[in-house]
Image (cartoon, rainbow, N blue to C red; front, side, top):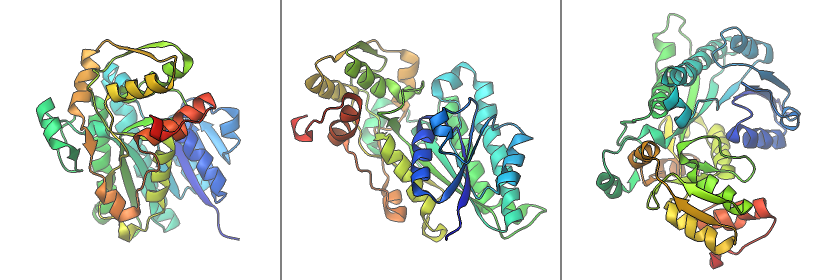
Length: 344
């Protein structure tokens, strides 16, 4: 019988955490240790070997989890998102950067203790980008990983900082530390676009105008979109996001040409999503009232991303493109009815 691997999932009760734990549980090869600031739903907790209510900043709890459960890999999903981060940037820095540092430090100690590299999967974001104006955004089209790294939100600043911390712990920490070791943190980050799930409600992200639009249309409720109709950012369904996490997690270290990868799937405008929903769902009633501060964030994010490195290095291949995402996954899951992509 093959050895089961003990993995820590922080932010376990969030949108990504829920889907990831379900997939990891189906693999039946992992002892899943769930950590969330709020207690997990009993059904989700039942898929975990152990679950804890706690903070990623806790310098007593986090080391104990690594030691007690012999953690071999970390999926660090816990974070304060963009809107809440702008309301309390100091707290966002503490949670997003300080929490990541706490986990990286303990992962590095665990690598030496277990004499094995500790894989550390980190969801980053397109909020790390900061395009200077709309004309540049239009010209740039698909942005590459090293371009326009000038975020204007605390969330983007935090995530970019964590990307650099992960690179440091992977490539430099063991060599420079007084506790030199051949074993190290193996940090792997994905810069996610806006994510849409058919099973978890939006949770306050700046890209959530798309899922909010969808959920309101399905419920037959009017929705006032806070973004302009022409706003265009990359998007991905939650199943494709979870699949990308598992693919980069499973990839051999030698196949990775970088620590941070763009991932994308489709990039419609808000108006294109509105048109699709109003054609398919009779209850769709969408209007626009632009929130200037949130729109300012969206305007600095790319229209789309170049994810060719992810495709080449570890086989990123999203199942859902724009029409298929709504026709084959989102609308059927939310309404119990199937639609044909060719009719959208």
